[in-house]
Length: 191
Image (cartoon, rainbow, N blue to C red; front, side):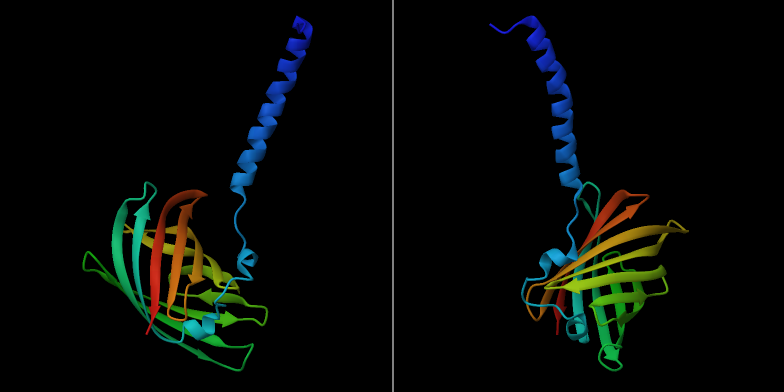
């Protein structure tokens, strides 16, 4: 039979051990994927090649609960200029929303030799930054979003995955002050 003193000592050890185990599990759950995790994935993505010419996109915006709030389509006219390693790209996006409204965003992208990208657009605060590895591209930026007559700044953590030479999937998490507001999910189809 185990003595009362030993049982008390065991309970004293169990609580910190349980707390440590739960904390480790939470920290592991908070680890985010890195673009380098996809370095060996095929087909290999080259943003300059995929976003060159006309690309159509079909998307939805979902709120935190997963409810579809808005549906939209995009026609993108894309081109690149400049010598290898110093190319500048233009992605001219024409949005059509399910409520009948329209919008436009024109990205100017610069690629460096290491596969990193920087970009600007009129409704983006500062400069966006991204990186491609394998079949994936991760893009982070702050968007100036008009809402009810005001403009709020929201952060985008934007992931793209090349599925074939014609199809790419995109999932972007939108947040403010670290709190998730919703997700944007897109399917790109290259003409």
